[in-house]
Structure formats: structure tokens, C-alpha cells
Length: 249
Length: 280
Image: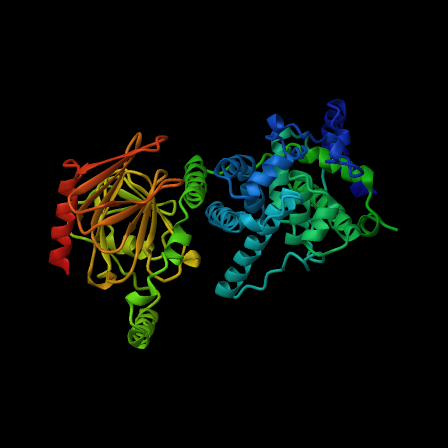
């Protein structure tokens, strides 16, 4: 309970601001990114607000149909809509700029080659992020093979936790940017399975159901994985803030 | 039940909500603008090329031959020769590129699949071309692919090569020219093969000749120094450009102008031919 309370001064202002801004519905664990928040107006396909954690609007059936035929205009539009999201996902999963570029390139080249296998009746997000996830896995496999590393896969890393510094001290007041920076580092240290669940759910707005399908898991397991990822972040943050340097990185 | 146990088995929505609110301060990782732009060009250009000019289909499905034009008794020797060619190709070391930079006063950089390589670094450039899908030149450059063909790329040429997995044979025989100009001289090993050079306006079917394809501001110009080349356009009848001839296609218009070879494009074709002759 003490640990739970210790982060209150840091997290409460952010929560208050989010609630004040009326965003608590969007980021609530109960019904975030629901269809009611999505626009089907093709004029608003690109998110007007690129903040993380904001839902990405639904794409029109006409767009998806044209995309599935390999229509160059639809592909160009697709690139504009998905480049930042795919790069952001891959970069968060790999934590290296140049590797993220290589894998992002692989993702888009794969999309280009296999676009005609896409079923326009289905949602585009899970299709794209499944490709991205597979490319990230391919990279890990090749790197493991090359470096003979025993890394944890996307599917079995739930039990890998990081040690928590035992030191305790007064928590510093944090500016938003500082809090964001600390959390970025904490996200990078999450086990891969938690990180993918967190990024796909929170930053890319995929539903638990879709993430579960992507990873061949049941929805409850993904919900739990997501919640544990948040818990890990909280504990990592607490650990960093308890350091003598006051969490400076 | 400790807080740790509860978070593992039963999500604490209130705590999750607080963390999610904090996550709103995490910024999205941003890619380098150069990378984003280069990948966009590659993604969209290749898609456009694949859409308007069916490179792969044309390479994989050549027009049906007249059954009587090739006597049956030739079938087995031809098949054996083809198999021997495949075996010979398979014996080539995987890391050994058959692309070579031809001798010449080339300067500048070549962007090979988003990686910029100085022309002066020939070894690296030739190696990277082995698996290249997209090439963009800043200056003029001449390359040869073994004894198959030699290419002259004008400054500012943006070329997309048919990906390996879409080819019906290992040699790169499909090119999409988005910008600039590509001149081709075929070599002794090209015999019997077919190359497609496509632009957004047309595709040129090359079966052994010296051809130049120049992408212009308002269309595409196909010049033929030797032999002949077949030009195919969407929804139009195919046209043949003969020796010392040219065909000019204006974008958005159905008619095409033919005439004598474009004298502005001819010198580079002749230079390439002479350089290739010295090489082979």
C-alpha cells in the first residue's frame, strides 16, 4: 500500500489534467478507443491530434477496398496514415533507430507485396500490426541466432521482471516532459510481451480482442498482460524516482 | 492479497487509469525525415509501377510463340541448355555481385535502398547492388550486369528493380524508371531473354538491342539505336520502334509521335555501346 501511495504526488496531476480535459473516457481501462470515439468520415482519417493514447479513426470501406486492389493513391494514403504508427511501434519494440528503420522498411515492403491478400472486410490495424510484429520477431530471431542471445519472446516473457531498487526517499515534483522521459525509459525496459501489449493497446488503440487474436491468446490474458505492464511501469518509475539522483537519467 | 498479487490476477482499474494518464506525456518516436521520404518514394513509386505497368506479368508471361516456329527436335537441347544455365547461376557465390561499375568519370552518390553510397566506393556499391530494389543517382553512372547488359543512368535517375521474389529468373530484367533516363545495351549472355523498362507512361519490351528510355516532364521518349523495341501502353495498341527511330509518348494523350532518333539522347547511347564493346 505504501508503494501504491508513493507515486500519487507524481501521477495525480497527470490524472487530474486528463480528467479535466475530458480524456478520462478515452484512456479508461474499461472502454478506451471504442467505436463511439471513431470517425468514419474519410476527411478525418488522419488523426487530428497525434498525441499517444488517442484513438485512431476508422477507415472508410471504400478506402479499404481500394487499398486491397493495390490502388496507388490508396497506398500513398495508407503510407501517410501508417508510417508514424508503424515506425513508432517498431522503434518502441527495438529501441534502436537504425534497426527500427530497417524493420519498418521491411514492414512496408511486405505490405506492398501482400496487399492483395488483405480482406477489405476486416480491420486494417490488426493486419498491419501483425505484419509489424512478425517482422520484429524475425529481427529478434536473426539477432538471437547471430549473437546467440537467449532473449525472451513476445509470447513467454510475462515472468521476466526487473529488479527494483530498494532505496526510498521523497519523490521529486516532475515536469510533464521529465515524467514522459522517465516513462520512455521504463517502457523500453518492459519485457517484450508486456511492451507489445502496452504499445498496441495504449499508443495504437487496438482493442484487447484484436491484440488477443494477433498473439493467439484469449482476451482476458491480454488484459492482464496490459495491466501488469502498467504495474511494471509504476514500479519502475517508483524505483527511478527513489534513486539518490532523483531519477535523473 | 498484496498489491503485487492483485495486479497480477485482477486489474486495478484506478491505478491503471493513473498510469495511463501519465503515459499521455510520452512522446511518439519520430523517424528521420530523410528515411520517411525515401521509404515513401520506394513504397509509392513501386506500387505505381506495379499498378500501371505489369512488370512481372510481362516478364513471366511473354506472348505466345507460334508453335511451328521452333521445331520439336530443338526442345530437349534447349531445355538442357537452360538447365545448365540455371546450374551455372546457382554456382555463383551468393555474396559475389555481378553488378560492376564501368570505367568512367562518375561522381556523386548512389542511394541504394535508402543507403547513400559514394560512387567512388565501387566495392561497396557493387555489393549493395546485388540485392538492390531501388537505385537513385545524383550523377551519371554506367553499370554492367555481367555480360548480360550495360546500363547508363542519367543524373537524377530513380530506378526500381523488380524484387527477387517476384522474378521468374535470377537476373534483374524488370526496371521501373520514375525519373531520369535509362539506356540499355544488351550483351552476349542476354541472348533469348527479355527485359522490360517501364515508366508511368509505357513499358518497353527489349529483346536484344541498344535502347534509351528517357522520362520527360510531360511524357516518355523511347529511342532505339540498334535492333528494335516493342512499346506497350495501357489501353493502346503496341508500337515498334526500329533502328535509329524514336517514339514520344505525351502523358495523358492517346496518340504517340514517332520519328528519327532523338539526337539529344543518342550520344549517351553510343558512348554506352562503345564502353560495353570494350568490356565484352
